[in-house]
Length: 411
Image (cartoon, rainbow, N blue to C red; front, side):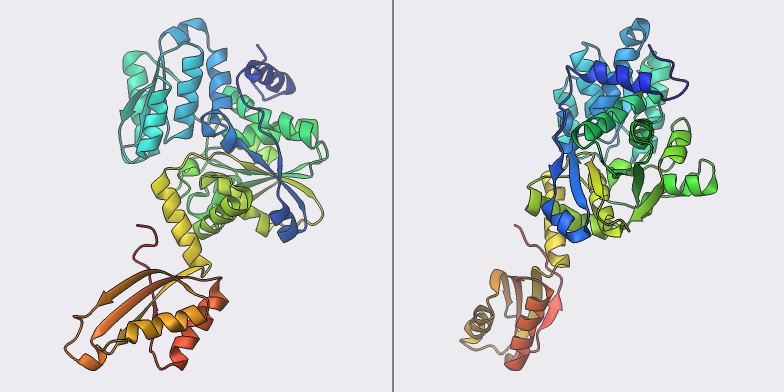
């Protein structure tokens, strides 16, 4: 076994050998859309197509494979909101070991069921990862289980780092790799190995603005803990980055970006429509970051770290994405209570090529029959300019229509 005082080439090479018969070697996917948009040659590394739907199985399997036999026999335990949970559960199943996973009570049911499907025992505890993590450590102490940390472990980091082997095998002249950062395991592994194999490569780490604990820690030169986190990217919502992996991230990630959540919503819709890929919010950080680069004419690889998302969240992201782009909007207008008014509104919309999705017709908002009916119409449009054209057409016909927030797009 290699000496893991440091992440070195021997550690990564052995990790690759351990994973060889287990994982999927996800292919690079060329993105015409983002290539055209950014002026770089953009490729995706779609780890959302990996076993369990995320890269986490790499580090979990390597860590568990390297454990001494007595630690394996005691049983494994970890804490995770989803991807690491499934990675540990599958790795334990493949190595015929028992695993207990502590997940926050707010974890989507699909992630809980997926973890159970790999044979793990799931314990729901706490409102967030930190509370689940503390409980997992208590159980490990009480029951004698072996704890498998989701990111703050060099064995785990060496497994995650094998992604760099695959990227540089498929695209040897890669100029930059963009990756999401939560606790730092993925960043430590990929950045360190990439720099070993290609020292001139640029590594760009991306966090959500509401949970940029690594960026802050690197700027301060020490581990910092956020007082709170606020992001839809739950897979990287970490208050405190790992102290073990921190030096490797600090030394090998060239720069850090913080991305607002609204950009992840837009990226979800684009990736789904243009590439037919479902990528979770954390994995979309490396996509949203593409528009913030000052690079031109470079070969850029964005790591899509995972794709585990429940359908309710997906539906919400699609709806908000369409609204943000002006492709779905709602207006309300007061109409006289007389026959034909609804038909007139529909005729104006049809002439402007708007597509009606939903109508709400309320005849009891007022006793004034001249303005007694409230009509709310939800439409599909081509974008903000088309939306404004429709609203102007209504105004030209004397209707005082106002934009309103859709109550629902999909029922």
